[in-house]
Amino acid sequence: MRRLVLLAAFAMVAVAVAAAPRAQAVTCENLAFEGNRYAVCTVNPAQEDLRLYLDDAKGKRIGQFSRLNELAAQNGKRVVFAMNAGMYHENRAPVGHYVEDGKEAMRVISSPGPGNFGLLPNGVFCLTDTRARVYETRDFLAQKPACRDATQSGPMLVIDGDLHPRFLADSTSRYIRNGVGTTKDGKRAVFVISQNLVNFHDFARFFRDGLKLPDALFLDGNISRLYAPDLGRDDLGRRMGPIVAVTEPR
Image 1 (spheres, rainbow, N blue to C red):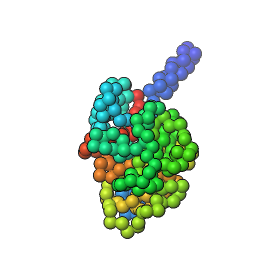
Image 2 (image 1 turned 45 degrees about the horizontal axis):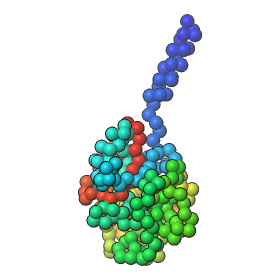
Image 3 (image 1 turned 90 degrees about the horizontal axis):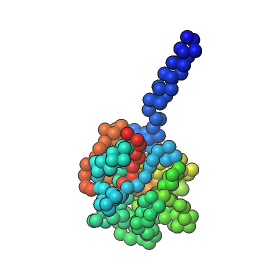
Image 4 (image 1 turned 180 degrees about the vertical axis):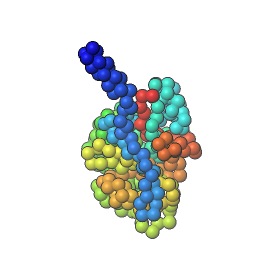
């Protein structure tokens, strides 16, 4: 009898462990820094399936969080975090370097140009199966990291602990902005979208001085959008080009 009771107890423990939800390595929270408000989502790329998305299997732009959720559901998954991930042309093709699942769709652009993208130095957000890193573009070209996914944008916000040299503390150019910062070891990627209008200087200082991240990259401004169910966010707006997202089994 005692043996049967013990076996039953072990069985209950096994069922409880199997049913327990997997510890999620995506955390989203609202933070304030020097009078500005931000939504912040932190991802451990070694524990979560963090990837870039542009087109569906038929070559059609995904463009919306709702469509990405539909595609994920078809594969037995759900989206737990998503954000726009780089600048794009009118046809929503990436402006700069873009790699998805090892396939390059756009080469690296290293020359100066118009707009925020061409405000050098710009940078590349690089993903492997276990790491996420923001590289300044010239450093990226020199190191040639093997990225499973990559998206280029600009300008850089923080470069090896320094703010972009063109940023002005008293700039009146204020927008909703989003970006990504990473740790030197690539074990943590932090995605941020401002909840009020900010200039580049204030936004970059949040990454460097608020979040203590050595490298950060601006992703976009006017079209900045976030999908974060934990924060009640499912932003609407114009259709996007590249999207960065975390999915997990349903």
